[in-house]
Image (tube, rainbow, N blue to C red; front, side, top):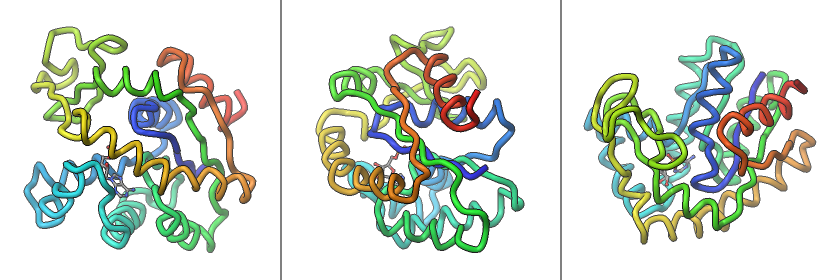
Length: 214
Ligand code: AMP
């Protein structure tokens, strides 16, 4: 299965991608995590991406496409995969279409629908682990010990681009550049839609149902 998750910032793509991939044993990647990993390792790509990410705008297509295609080439071993946060522009979607054209194509693009009011509340409480990047939420998915990761005990922090200002910009970028992809995948007859407003378990079940029909 080759699956992508679409949805606005704060829809729960990262949390749900990790859960669905673990349940189905699928390799998964988040383009945002790949960029953050480059930043932690202080690579040239990481330093370049940081300036875009801090402002809440997209990293240029060419760099992003190369990075994700490289991951697909090296980490999936011809198996399926689950992509979180990629594609985010029409050019990225076309690059992925090209990559898939010699294979069976994309199986599902799942759009996680969440109202603006809920998104703002979710993003305001998000925390991430500095070590393993695991996502938490102060209210909806709190860590067992305040400010430290349940898995690796590293410190939890709020992302720069989750702070007011950058968040507004990310919503604007989403509406202008990413939302049109919903129509792109609807036309390709691979679009499924789920509500992302339930609790974490409910949304996971809805996703599994939308993708595998159970
Ligand atoms: P995310 O973790 O998915 O919210 O992404 C955080 C930031 O990383 C975004 O606001 C962009 O600056 C950058 N980014 C992640 N994925 C992409 C992508 N597919 N295309 C361009 N920029 C991206």
